[in-house]
Amino acid sequence: MTTSPVERAADQFVTALAHWRVERGMSKKQLAARMGFDPSYVSHVEGRRHKPTEDFARRAEAVLGAGGVIWQRFREYDELRHARGSTALHRDPPVPVQWMPPGTGLIVEQEVAELTYTDGVYRCRVRRNLYNAGSEPVTRYLVKISVDRYPHDPAGSNRHHRENPLTFEEMSIEALAGEGGAVEPMQWRVKLDRDAAKEVWLLFANERGQFPLYPGDRTTIEYAYTVGGEKWGQWFQRAVRLPTRRITVRLNFPTGFDPQVWGVETSLAAEVPVRTPLERHNDGDRAIFEWTNDAPLLNARYRLEWRFRGSGAPSYAEFAPSEQNGKPRASSAMRGIGIVQRGSDLLRQRARHFQLPREATEAREAVSALLTSLRRLEELHDFSKGVGLAAPQIGRSVAAAVVRPADRGADPVVLLNPRIVGEAGDRDEQYEGCLSFFDYRGLVRRPLRIEVEHARYDGARVITSFDRAMARLVAHEIDHLEGRLYVDRMHAESNLVPVANYHQTGRPWNY
Image (tube, rainbow, N blue to C red; front, top):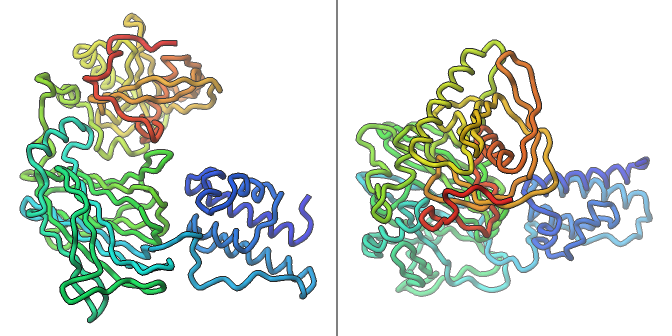
C-alpha cells in the first residue's frame, strides 16, 4: 500500500506518463525509442522498478507534449524526494529554457498552412516559425508538394497526372525568410520533378548573399504555390516531418459552394478523425475553416477533406473517370443506387441510438429502408461472402444495420443499437470490401467470434454470438455505426488492392 507522500507523488508521475503515452497512441517500446532509451526502460519506470530521473521526465514531456503535466508531476515528486533526504544529495542540473531530445536539429515552433480556392485555382501558403536547436547552421529547407486528383483510385490518378502533369511554370513558387523589416527572398532549387510530386530546396540565400539560420536563432519562412483545380483532389494534408509544437490549417472557400469539411489523422497505428474540432466562420462571401493541434505527433499526417454541395461548385465527379478498363467503376454502381461513398462526413460520425420502444416506428422505417437497399444491391452484385449495410450508408445517422449471411436463403439479421461485448482471442486476416469504397479491397484482422448486445423494437436487450464470416460482417457494420471504416483497422504497411486485381470475388472467405 502506498503510504508516504514521496510514493504517492511517484504514483502520480507514473499515472500521468501512462495517460499521455496512451493518449498519443504509443506503446512503451515506441516511446522509449523516441526518447532515446532502451526499449524496456519506459516499462520499468511505469512499473515502479526504476525511479524517474529529471532527464527522463524532460524527454517524456518533450516527446509526448503533455502541456507541462508530466514535468509538473516529476517536480512534485523530486521536491519531496530531496526534501526527505540530505541537502547534500546530488541534484540534477536546472532544466534548460528549451530542452529537446538528443539529436534534435530544426524545430517548427508553429506552422500555419492556408489553402484558398479562387476562380478554379488553389493557392497554398505555408508559414513556419523555425528554431535551430542543433549544433550546425541551417542553409536550406526541404519542401515537398504532391497532388492526387483521385486519392481512392491510384491507377486512375496516375493516368490523369501523366496526361496532366504538374509543372513548375504554373506553380509560381514564392519564398521568403525573416521577420519584421529583415525579410529576404529565398532562392529555390529543384530536388525532385515528377508528374504529381515536386520537391524543392528553399535556400537561405539570394543574389545578395547567404543568411544561414545559426544554432540558437529563430526565423520565419513563408512559401506559396498554385495548382489548378483539375489537378488538386478534395484534400489538403500536412505531414509532420520535424518536431512541431503547434500546427494550424485553414481552408478558404466561396460560401456559395456550400462546403462540408472534416479531418482525418493518420499515424503508424490507425486512421482516425482528428482529435480537435474544426471551426468555421464566414467572412463576406468566403467560408473559412480552421483546425489547430497544439501537440502534433512526429511522423503523423493530418488531412482535411471536403465536398461542395452548392450549385455551380466544382465537383470531383466532373473529372473522375466513370469507367475503369472499359467497364463501369464499381463505386459508380453503388453511388447510383444511393450508397453514400467514402468522403462523406456521415461515414465519420457516430450514429445516434434509438430510444426504444418510444422510437420503434422510426427504427422500423430505417430497417425497411435498409432491406430495400439490400435487395437492390443483390440485383447488382453477387455477394458470395455475405453482405451488410449500415444506416449511415444510406444517409441515415441512426444505429441500425442489416447483415445477410453467405447463404442466400437465410434471412438478414437486423441489428439495432448494437455493441460488441465480447470477442474471441483467436483472430484471422481476410480481405474486406465496403459498399462505400467498392473499388478496392483491404486486408483486415478481426476476431473469429464476437458477442453482440443489441435491441429489439420493444426495447429488450439480447446478446447474440456470431462466428467467422458473420462475425466479420457484423463487426464491419458496427464499425460503420461508430464512424469507423475498415481502412482504419488495416496495418500501416498494408496496401489497398484495386478490385480489378482482387482474385477472390465470387468466393467465400476461407477458414
